[in-house]
Length: 226
Image 1 (cartoon, rainbow, N blue to C red):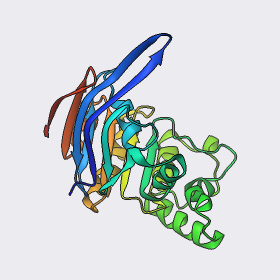
Image 2 (cartoon, helix red, strand yellow; image 1 turned 180 degrees about the vertical axis):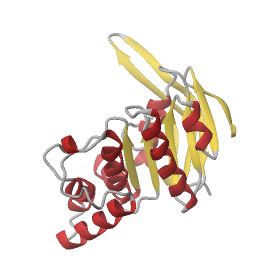
Image 3 (cartoon, rainbow, N blue to C red; image 1 turned 180 degrees about the horizontal axis):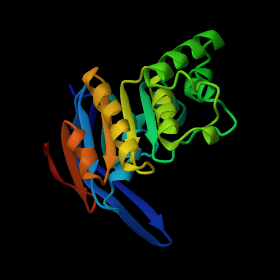
């Protein structure tokens, strides 16, 4: 059984008096431990697809099962629990809290989960040290480079031991060398057995993935191994 399974997923938005369909019947399965890149040009629907996979947006039609559970039937509270407990997210713009240290940013999901402070800080410190930021724990985002901010965001995504990590253009705001460092981190996470789904328009990012799914005009154009 796949960890992630979309079948016939459609997504439409209302713009004025018009229904605009962004996804037109997406079928997608991701096995546990896979590293999948979702590729496509701007406006192809890849980010909308990721929002559905990440339980941020609901499909207009079709089914989504996460670890066998029908996600489209969950209420808002259970969707929030699913995101918090079994999913990790990495964004192009990092989405760090500007007044919090790297340590507190990385530990934030555990705070929301009600874990004790000592446990939160120990787990976040271990991850930041593993990602090469053990000497930057008390620095705030404005005191960190873009690559360091993205490492903090990756630590935050991992701190709850999620079943899958979703990343939206994780190297989009980074220079070429730093982007490659972040890609190496993702590759190492995959080698550790983690499940990764990364949205990108970069062929270099896609080349690091185990499988590439190409989306165009809201439909899967190609799904296969690179």
